[in-house]
Image (cartoon, rainbow, N blue to C red; front, side):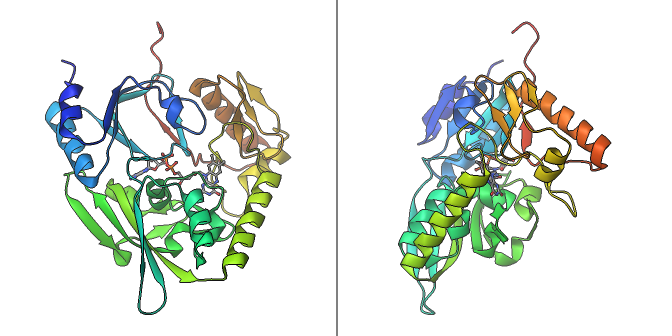
Length: 311
Ligand SMILES: Cc1cc2nc3c(=O)[nH]c(=O)nc-3n(C[C@H](O)[C@H](O)[C@H](O)COP(=O)(O)OP(=O)(O)OC[C@H]3O[C@@H](n4cnc5c(N)ncnc54)[C@H](O)[C@@H]3O)c2cc1C
């Protein structure tokens, strides 16, 4: 029997939408319908959604800004929990040692916070401008760029565990490595992060943000939908370089194409399906292995169900 999702809507302050197309919520603009899309407005909402899912025996999938996701064309079974703009409050607290603690809900966008903190003359996130991650996604994946990573500033996080308990984790519990964190292993939903920022020169920080953004515009194809880097950099090399050396720039399957500008980006030329992208990923992996001997491992998360043949 189909779960009574209206009952969920009455239990949370946030929003519940049935059959929402996930392509509206991913930067690739790809993804079929979620049976139920729930957008919590608090950690209590998240706990209530998890409790409802348990009662009804439906699976849950959590995501943030969908900037590292390939959602398959059949969409998401059960409840897709979007930690998004309904969880976007933040506050700044000055400490006696002159540093500042930013307490920010997970739905805020990292790139926007990089700009906001630079404008306040606070150092720590300026390298992250241009990364369209939610803070929850950045904390879970340990987003990074230009020799920096999110965990350099992270000092604490509020999470909702799979059992629905709301917990605060301190620095010691937040272990991490390249694109991997203890939060992934825990399978918890991050609802808030605490970041430590230092005083800096406002003009210098704003300049650094603008320089980083200019570098991204120069190197990355930002004019068409993508999920950033598709493959992890293998030990000792760069995925984009390997793809380019294999002559795969511009390779196309359906409406998905390897960028001419950056070999590790796959672009949605308009109306690409997840199937197009998955087939192109296979082509790239096969050709790179054959020509360069490297096994490329996807950095993007592939989730959801295949489209039924009769659809
Ligand atoms: C143009 C572009 C440039 C990019 N540049 C970079 C870059 O320089 N460096 C980099 O690291 N990444 C980059 N990315 C990729 C992406 O922004 C990061 O991987 C980011 O960390 C994903 O965050 P998200 O909120 O979009 O997560 P989503 O894509 O929504 O989800 C990613 C994973 O995190 C989990 N997750 C998300 N939110 C939560 C939460 N609140 N609690 C628990 N789990 C959660 C999801 O279950 C999923 O497994 C780029 C992407 C684009 C499109």
